[in-house]
Image (tube, rainbow over all chains, first blue to last red; front, side, top):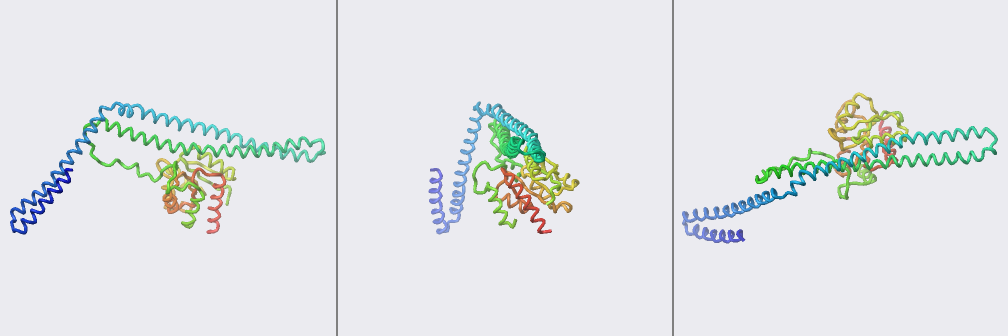
Length: 233
Length: 130
């Protein structure tokens, strides 16, 4: 509304300015130009003043908000501790599983190898008395191979720890930054922020695992291969 | 392809390094060492006479992409074949990795077959070029 009034005033002033110039009244024209100029800036200053008051009031209200203080001082550090605990525990679990699998792989290899050697030894004897033994060895060999394959799957399944760990570590960093900013905000309350841009996040070139769909994200190896093929790979 | 070649596996997560080393062992490559980021890997590469590098991208201190650039800018290391194995899957990152000079790019999560295929392809191409 104020702006519309200013615009109408400006239009009326401008018309009078044209009249004054046409009439050759340069003194009056100068006064009108000054009036036009001042009117515009008065409105601007009023708007800035109003915005400043709003910002100040918002910050002043924040001081009275105990939840924000509690969030910054207790809940955020607590959330970070919990996330760190998840990283530690999943890493510990992944390590234990990997150790168990690494212990079992040579055992299954050995079982298959010994079964083969035993069969060779039995083949040099009369076969009829050894039929049952052969059947048993068949089982040991084939199950041993399946065991080996399953163990490899268990091994590969552990990669979740790397992927979720990366996501969680990033979240911890982000929460830490938010916490720091909130503490600053609360302690500096009543002082209007300088408006300076926050520092860039270390100019990182990596983004971590893609946790949701995005046109720019290539999730499948086949698509990566296609892109690289287009680049001459 | 020489199965006895010396391989350096670089990843900041020890679990992923172990997975990759186990997969390499399954594929018959028994001569592998580990580093947890680019800054640790670079001096190892300079003195260790490695034949092949498998590196992650997102790591503290020195990222994988910077390691690739440092290798390609080094007179002694520039010919080292590099396979990047990473969760970074943005189009511009894959292009950047190609421009930096990687020989192959695998996105996590990946399979044992993918690793086998990419290693075979890298050495097949190098063999053809030699």
